[in-house]
Length: 132
Image 1: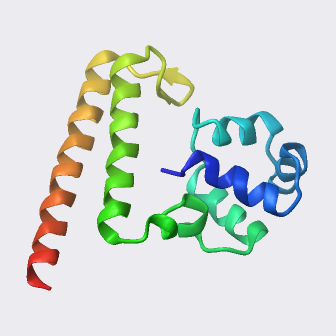
Image 2: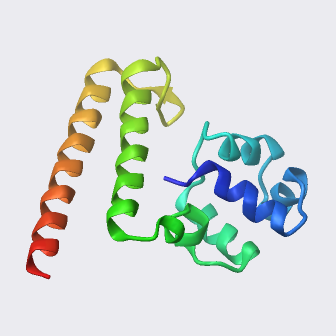
């Protein structure tokens, strides 16, 4: 997940307003505002466009390169995933599929899948770190 303040910092460093950045990206300024306030996350294609506009890597747009270490980056990812899980568990219309809210059963399956993916990623990371 993108670190919300990171997009704002990159935008301000280039002396762009939210409206100017939005125009370059082909989105509304409200979308940029939502990213900067951590309410939404830009899609993968938008991350590519942001990296091109800011002339930095996608990892820099996401705020991962400043983490300083793989462990800190993993902790940032964990926090992001925890936030997503919390949103899914607590908000009625947290996700839409084809414009319709997910039903409770589907939402539970998605949460279980994300939790499983997190656990698998931790196991793989621990195994890689143990071998180095």
